[in-house]
Image (cartoon, rainbow, N blue to C red; front, side, top):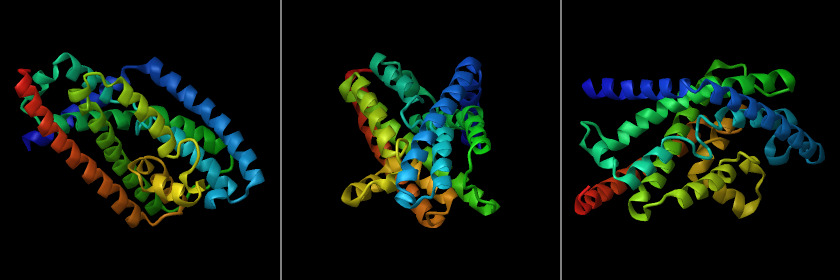
Length: 266
């Protein structure tokens, strides 16, 4: 019970922390809305030439764009969450202080990132999505159960996103400078999540590979659940499998890194 209250407080602190950056949030809302408008018109032109590309009709393609803008910051598709701070703490050695806390390192940062994700979803994601649905024809479901399934897929996407970024941050124990890893993460996240184009449009082996990677859990999987293009239970199993694998890998790397800190003397 005590641990539960601790991590709940950490999550609430993460939410409040990002809620204080009101100007940055407003700028993010504006940026996501403008970028969504650009993407929508690009998609409309593309779907005019190739109707039902990737199995989507035009309304579904438009909906996909606005889902991407709503989830972009919440799921840290290109980073921008805890990983930069953790990497810096590893570089400076301040992570030794974190290891002395009466809390698990991985769960601490997970709780903080969940708080950040929830704020970004509500504070930065809702307005662009609503604006898009008011300005363009979209394909939104009427059944509450579909929206509930979508919420579960988003939550699982949060876990997958955290697992990827936690492993990337822990690489700083060996690389000392995580800049290169973070830049790679930005590029892979933008492409592999389907943020630029739905992964369903990629043909053959390339399409199968990108859809099998964990980044597809961030946007493609939740979008397909909401659009009725994927079986929710199968999608949950796919996301949960990647989440469990990434979190377990993070636990193993954390254990190895902790031994490294002890050997190096802090």
